[in-house]
Image 1 (cartoon, rainbow, N blue to C red):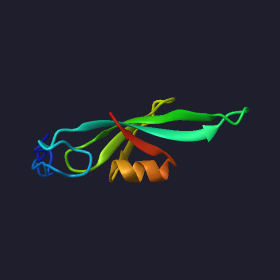
Image 2: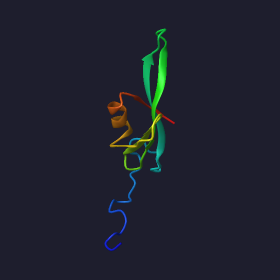
Image 3: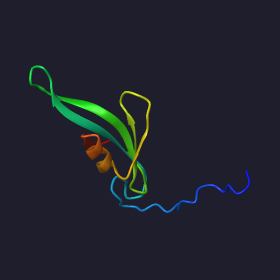
Image 4: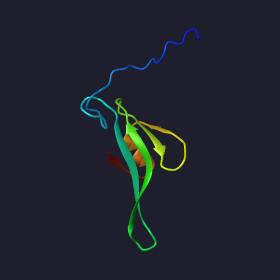
Length: 88
């Protein structure tokens, strides 16, 4: 494939960005939503499993289903999916 030279994106990782460790490594999280069951007991449901990427972005996979989400941050995924970020 002529003209294809791999990613044009910078390979520089920014340590200390939201969701990454001090070394810039990806960090796992879960998106959780709280609700009430029929007895008015609090129920926490896992909405998606995710990984915070070294560039500050995030990727998620829903707990049920086989789609894939790419987000600006774990927090933006949580807002969009009406959930809370729980770090693993």
